Image 1 (cartoon, rainbow, N blue to C red):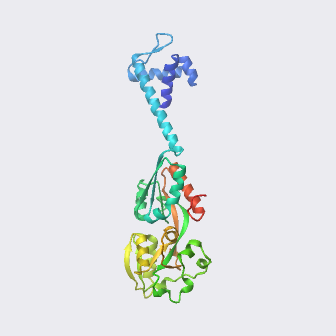
Image 2: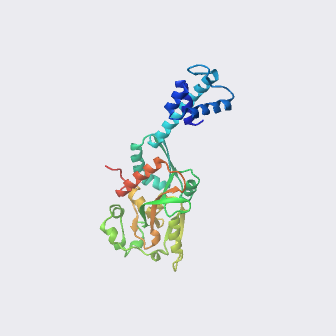
Image 3: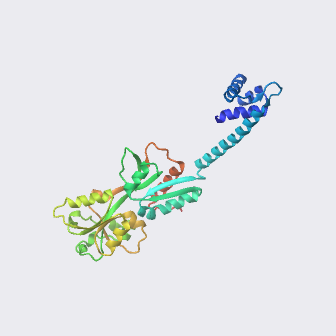
Length: 323
């Protein structure tokens, strides 16, 4: 029974007159009468006693109308709850990202979103990027924040910001000798200093005999690793493949090996100490951070509002909430 049909019956039960009910419903009396007759035939029981004026409900009709009122109340509650979802008073938002992005990039945007929409339940799923793509494709996530590009046939992605990979070198390494003009501090990167723009990049060919830590399952780090492997006299020692940016950073800071660190981690990782950084002369050192959705899937209003807040914060260049 549709909400419209419920309204027909409840209006007739209220008016107890076909003409008045039809007028109130803005339909013809024959149409209303035909609908009621069809329903009574389907139920094999009369709902209205037409032998009296005004008509009255039969015992079966009273039972049916009581049930119809309860159904109408359920419909009303459903409409209200859907309206609440539409207005973002309640609901759920499922976001997928990598652990370091969850710790570095999401707190400000999640905090700003919760201030505006405290009733929305937010679930953060932290996984490696390949697993995030699978979760998004299977409908277990509303959106993902990760490094692009993604499979364009499965996902719609929108760039949020450009991320730069820097070569991170242990502070005591002899690699620094003669490269003082290329060295960058974390402060240079965080403040976009003049030195950041003036410092020449380091060619990967200068690193062929160094020890490296690479991120496992990260397509951009794999590209850098492949670039190194195709260079003449390539003989670096791959000390570790890890799934953790934090591990790479800690091992480099302790002097074990070189690694590549994204500027988002440098800017927002809240690290007290840093290695020495160098710009890389490689197209693989640049990548877009994207927000991705599954194609041909409904994007909730909560997800749309969150992405809007995220874009606003990124537009300020600090991921800080508007002041």
